Image (tube, rainbow, N blue to C red; front, side, top):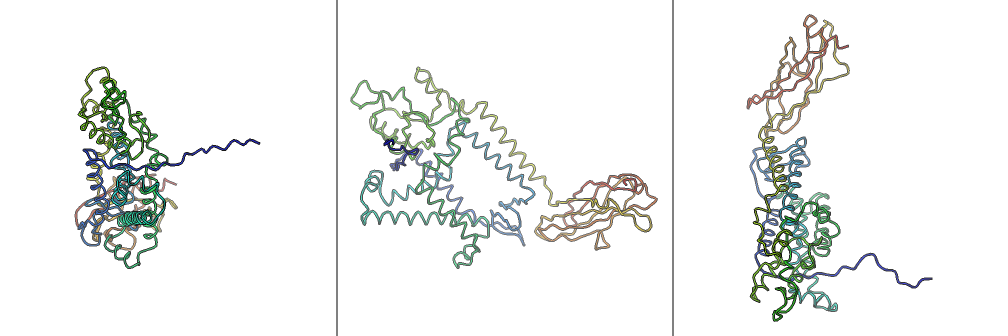
Length: 471
C-alpha cells in the first residue's frame, strides 16, 4: 500500500490585509462608495406626488399590482421590454467600459467591491492598519482579540442588516414597512429577505471578499474577450522598473522592491507579474507606487493606467498614444453606437406610448351567431387598461367599409367606466342585418375605436367580422 500523502486539490485561503493608502484613486473610490451607498440606502425614502390612489414613493417595485414606478415613469408588467432594454444597455455599457478601461466596473462600482471596501474600513478602524491586523490574526485568542473581533462582527452585522432592510423598502411603502418592522408586524417574506441578504452581505463582504471575485463571479473570465492591446488598464512599466534594487544601486531600475503595491492590493496580487485574472483594476497600487516614487525622487507612473501597446512603444523610446486615441477605437465606437441607439429607442417608445391599452379577441366558438331574424352577430372580448390614477369613461365605436352595428353587453350605451389603474373585460357584439353585404361575404375588415371622454385620447384595434360565407 502506498504511503504517499494525498495532495489536496484546493489551496487554503491566505488572508489578505490591505494597507491604508492615500492618493487620487483612493479618494475617487471613497467618493464612488459614498455616492453609490447613499443612492442605495436613501432612494426608497424619496417621495413623489402622483396624485390620488397612486403610491407616493419615487422608486417602487409594486409586485402586488405588477408595476414599477421610477419618479414620473410608470411601467406596467406587459411593458417589460423597457426593463429588458435597460438590462441590454447595462450589458453594453459594461462591455464598453471594459474595452476602454479594463475592469473599471469591478474596481469601483461593483456591489461586492463597494461593500468589501466598507467592511475593510470598519476593520481598519477597530483593529488598526495592516501590520496591526496581521499581528492580531497570528495572536492567540485572548480577551483583547475576542473583544475586537466581536465589536467588528457586530458592526458588520448592523451594516448587513441595513443592506437587507434597504432592499425590501424598494418593494413596499418605506415608512409603512419601517413601522411594521419596528413593531414586528411585517410580513414573513420581508423578514426572510432581510435575513438572506444580511447573511450574504456579511459573508461575502466580511469573510470571502476576493474569493467571490475569483471563484464565484464569471466576469473575470469573460473580460479577456472585451480587452485588447489598446485597452487602458493598470499595468507596471517593467522596462523602467527592472531590474529591481535599492536606490543606491546605480544599475537598478526605478522599482526598489518595497512591496507597497502588493500590501495595498485587496486581491493580494503583485501587479509587477503582469496582467492577472484576480486584478480588479482598483488602481490603489498606483497611489502606493506614486507615493514611493515621490519619496525617492523618481517620476510617478511606474505603475499606471496604460495600454500594452503603449508599454511596448515606450520601451523602444517612442511616445505613447493619447488617451482619446485609445478610447476612439472601432470596438468602443460600435458599443457606444449600439448603447445610444437602444437608449434613444427606449426614450422614443416611452414618449409615444398611450395611456389607453386595449386588446380585442374574437370569440371563435362559434365563429358567428345567427339570430332569429337572420342577423349575423360576432362576439368579441375587449380588455381596456386605464393607466390613469382616476376612473375614466370610455366611448366605443367602429369603422368599416360595410354597414355594421356595435352593442355592449350589460348596457344600452356605448360608454363604459374603467376604474383607475385597472383592466376591464367588456364583451362587445357586432352585427350585420341579413341584407347587408357583410352578412353574406366571408370576412369584412373593421376597426374598433376607444376614446377617453376626459382627455380625448383615442386608441384602436383592427379585427375581422365573419359572415355566413365563413362557414
